[in-house]
Length: 306
Image (tube, rainbow, N blue to C red):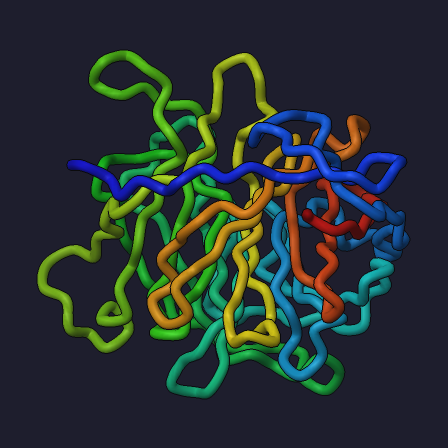
């Protein structure tokens, strides 16, 4: 299958004399700007935060969850890591929850929880849980709907998802892979169409391979292994941006406002060297990005890209 090609852009960095020079995309000298340590997770229950999704009506609050083997539970946190609420997801199990995204649904707005982690690329099918978004403080449980599906090109590790305005779900592969010619492949982009929620599919539900991103994970160098993704709030011009997090950088793309299809890459910003295990990302209301690591008491940082 010929994948849609995403043009590469260059980024700019400010010099001390306030002149601008272009830096080739991927140059590690394009660092995340205005990096600030916001706090750390203050609750021992949040020990493997692996995804973020904004809380409805307050984009300075986020839903997060733990990684594999933990309870099927969501946590509402602020940008300093303080836990404000806990929600048990009834009917769900956590085999390997790797991502969460917010998006539209028949109930109005839902949380989409991706049980898609597969380090060894052995899971023939994986699961997406969808739950009507609960209130942060006065609801302690919510019931999930389960969607079991497979990837069109076979098992692989996925840790980044996002949901489009048309309710299609996009999934981005994490790890290195080789093409037919033996060359390292760009990250693959799969899509579950909106029809899967209406029951209009025939046969097993399949996430189609529809695209790729100009991010090429390499064996032996995990800086470009993809761990999360997040869609920005509406910008002044009515557009949105897609932030893709890797262990070594944040990359920002345009996306189609309705279908969610990724477009031009606008920037690649290297993370501070000490933050090589970044696992979750979200957008703050002022355009900054919030990201965190896995682990008990993990710190949260914010920054701007570009």
